[in-house]
Amino acid sequence: MNKIHVKVGTWGAFDYVIHEGHLTLLTEARKLGDYLYVFVVSDDIIIKNKKRLPIYPAKQRASNLINTGLVDDTVILLSEDYVHNVEEQILSCRLDRYIFGCDQTSLADKYLEKRLCDFGVEIFVSKSPMIIHTTEILRMEGLIK
Image (cartoon, rainbow, N blue to C red; front, top):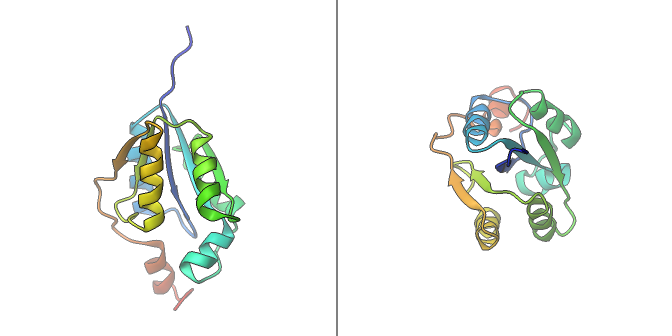
């Protein structure tokens, strides 16, 4: 008999180092199901949203996530027609559950949450406050202003 997998997803940039805040989110996500997808934003999306170049290219960031041992698969989100592609790519994985980081409250996040709910995906929000953001680490290390 095949085990029915509960598929969980989350998204983010995960640029530079995988820090404690990332690991907390990934650990929470891992506990919600049997298979964890992490949707990694493209380099172009980092440039557009964060107004800086990524420290690592998307493929390296995806590999870093797999190397944590918490993530089963990564999907690099396409940047053309950002909202439509993100929605299409995430919905194509047929997730059962999705967890947002406690700091993921943008209009794009809210739109994604609504669309996931429309498709019957159970929504969670990380209970752990973000201890540190990658942007803060990059500033402390003098890599960005």
